[in-house]
Image (cartoon, rainbow, N blue to C red; front, side):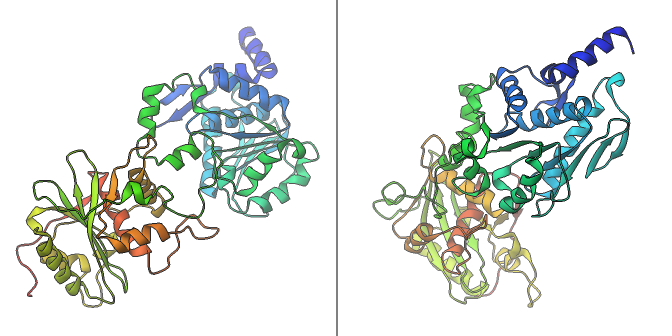
Length: 450
């Protein structure tokens, strides 16, 4: 080792910020592999990690906070070992991802600074000759109980299941001198993270908020782009670090005065027309939607079935099309549940039945909560614009959107067998509408007999 390398090691030993800004590399899809940046707000975060033994970090998204805390613990295991450091997150996979970042940081250190490793897996990173280990732990109640950690990094703390039980297992070990850093975006006024924030001083925690406007590269244009596709409520939680309640109503943005037209909508065949279908088990549901030249969407008709077959639903679609003065030639496509492509006992799927009748179907898979966020962003985006409205003719859909509720203790809506079918159809449509990379089932040259 040269004299300059020795001096560099001594400086890293004394100053974690020097270690981060001179020797740490990060990686993400947008920036690729990049040197850790010398941002003042991150420098302040490192000062807080050093001055506070227990620290809570409520933050906006995409602020390099996770990389910063991972790199800080790599510094501690290199220069403040020996010790066991625990990484916890909302799932086993997320905790493993934290450990992979630590391994990435070590892999990109200068050769003279890289220690030999005794273990290097998705669950454990151990350094030979230093006596330091980082363990990734699954989010189960007793996961940390057997350890006496020198430090704990709990990422996405507000979204981790069994948070109170995990904290109960951690607390006795931390009281003996371990360092704790809990980081998260907001999940609203619930859970351990929120409770500790509300009582931080009494519980012995320091708090540092990391807001997106602290980032030197987050200007007005970035904010404009980042707001797209996010509802006002989700923007407030994920970017403004808001812990206000959204209640148990799924679509709290919905307002009769803003979202219901004063009179029934008469569709125009020279503007784009769409349908959406939830095949349902006993309650199939169909929506008709028009797109205006301004890019707004009008849900103008509906059909609710009761133990109707796919053939009966098809007849209802044709009847309502006729009543509205439209037909399949006017339709861009009809969105549906991907599960409708599954073959039934009859040997043919509901999607295939509609396809044979000449209906152009479009579908893509998506997580329910992600689809709900798309709907919320059309009801009211982060800039306050309303792009989705309903004709007063759609009485069931309007009643359902007001009645749609989150399931207690779960990150998904209630399946009440009543309001969920129209809401599923609406979600299928908007998930397909916002992307151009869906599967389009083109109609065949024959139709079902009537």
